[in-house]
Length: 227
Image (tube, rainbow, N blue to C red):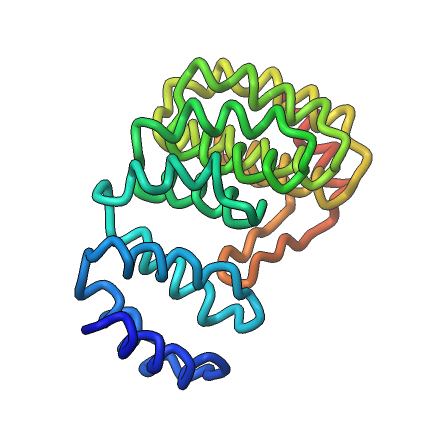
């Protein structure tokens, strides 16, 4: 399809919640690797008003794979919209780009809290043993509580990728459980500990609903008793 036709279709679905219409549009977007269409596709991520459409468009971009690796690397540096820069990094992580790691390590040092969050998530996907220390610094010291929680989930993802890392991760997780005062961050840390240890301390994670339920105080006591 020509770019003009694609744009006309986009205007028609801009406010839709109909998944079939969205999937039809993303299929047409992905039918070509024309650089102008790739640029157009990425630019659509600026509009987050329709979250369902946005999520599908971002997921569709990842389907372009390593073909867009260099394009995304460039966008992490040059995109004028800071959310787009972070999306570019996240997409590099989604396609498991070998270039994602160094960029993510840079992002976790940024002043912007969303950049640090995205950096943590990507390091969880593409990192290894050498990323335990920088992620643990976020886990224990980030000034934004939820980022401390996301760092724990990133460490858990490292463990999912390499189960041998558990003994290296757990001292940091234990310290974080002991020190953390924010309940949302603490719940993410304890859930991560439950996964790594294959133990239940009283919290339940609903991945689809993105909810964690249970008695956080009792779960902390149980976790520290075991650790």
